[in-house]
Image (cartoon, rainbow, N blue to C red; front, side, top):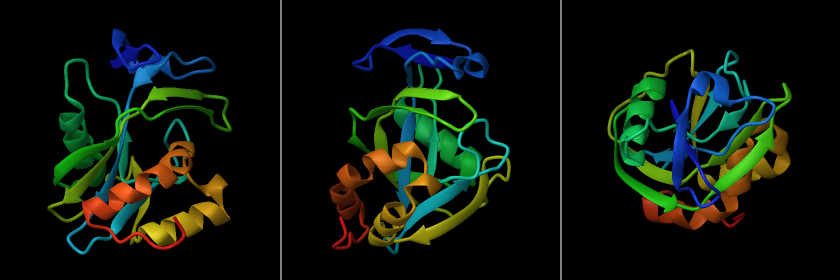
Length: 180
């Protein structure tokens, strides 16, 4: 189940996740999380080719939907463990009002109220191949350059929130380059 929300992110109901994403998707609650490691590197992942939406595109470390009644921070921990086999701490909501609407090549629409978080990795990665095709540790400046050169290769939510995210990555321990 996903939490349906109004334009301000207030819960207004729930819906079955398996049927919520389609040609006309109701606004629902989600999250994105950027993970940094002890060296200040930023994790990016490439979505598995079997994913329903945006298969094979590069994106932030982890994203998902909280269960009804689940805190966003607990959802970040749950999805990080499930998708990446990783434990995280220092979870901070850095863009609480972010939301987006986008349509992928298959015609499926995303319509998400999607707060953006940062977190610190406290264990090694063991990615779930049903969720993650590849991963890379990088720097914010290298990510900004890659998104600028080939935005089509990245998730629309990452492309849309990356510039606003940069100052928060500095506080999360990553070094932001001059491109931001």
